Image (cartoon, helix red, strand yellow):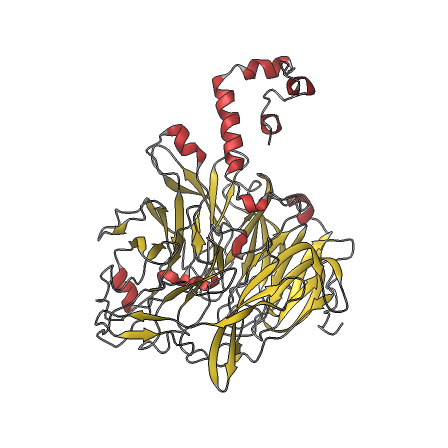
Length: 581
């Protein structure tokens, strides 16, 4: 972005490219000499540098959960959808494609993908969707045509403790490596009546294995010297996969707090080019005994992905452990915590544990009900005071508290919670926050979606780092369990739109799509779009569906269907297309 696009600063001309002084209008020349104007321009450029770099391509790809490894949920390269045309009659459903089962994973987007096998070979704009029936779909999102739909084996029916899901197969969001044209996906199958996890590396053009898949297996030493083995019957691979440091990472938790005498939180990794398991792994409750023979300390985060910073450190949250509320020690049991782990999984680098972890354990008030989001480095911090932390993170829990943390010092454990930068009530969170930069003041915003409504929080960097609630939506209540999922689209920092998927109630199967214009309504977010028809969720299990916005479309995968919204003269409910069409 040139300074002139947002401010009347001198614009480069052909003369300046030849080494001559650039021309400017009188007004531009006057501001050009202003230190304040120069500082504003510099800050504007730095703000744009804070836009996740994965999002600056001309045609947007979506290769991982919530757009990037910071899990910001911000697509800053949406040049088509604006608050004006989303609010118009031309925006609505353009495609609806029937799938073979519910989808818990987020769709992934690859424009101009070469399909190399089957009846539809050639380049297509592709959305990839993975179902709980272990079917992976490659769908042309312009036409709704199912290009490929291989199935990878029988899913696991009614996993232990979780009767709300008919089957569990592909439960987590895969991750793509466009450099090698590869999809990494965790597939859960029932073989000879035994549940098995396999990590696959599939070619994007054929959806066939490019490397021999590997069965997930691991062991870890407990505090008494005994060994615990990974047990796929009791471990649920719910968090989205992460591709970073040349490795693929997966987090594990339990099935609805079942098998608590066996299930523990695991973090595993494999080298991306060979699927060789990493030499080290992490287990977050290594105690050999507990008062109730109850362990867990799971990683689940309502499906959100483990995050990674530019140095390769991994971030995530853990859930409850023994209901006695007595087993946390910050070393051998790391329940109810935000955790930072080294890229080789050899050590826990840092953590933050809320002061009321004991009550959280006693009442099943998981920290890991919400994902963790890493904010891009904040350029204003260095301009104001280089002692102010500018690498930040947020995470919220079932108790409805959103914590603002310093990535470089998460805070450890303090009985008074004085170890974090701030804590804010947002409502019960089965959710993950989103991020964007507001065009009106160039300040960062955190979008919180705990409780029944959307909250927008402004990041203040001086005199101290804090979040201020500046806008809220009307209540979206009643929704199941509260908390929901958002993303943000914008063109650079212009035309931001907050996209929201509301959960179904206990009594209906519909999910709801909302769009809000954060620039139009002041302290009350202005709703610019609503649809009660983006999909269904006919199961009691929590819907963790998330809207994906890219290239003028909004993609929503839910209970047996993919719905695509976009701009069209005739956008009313398109007939569902089956995989056979």
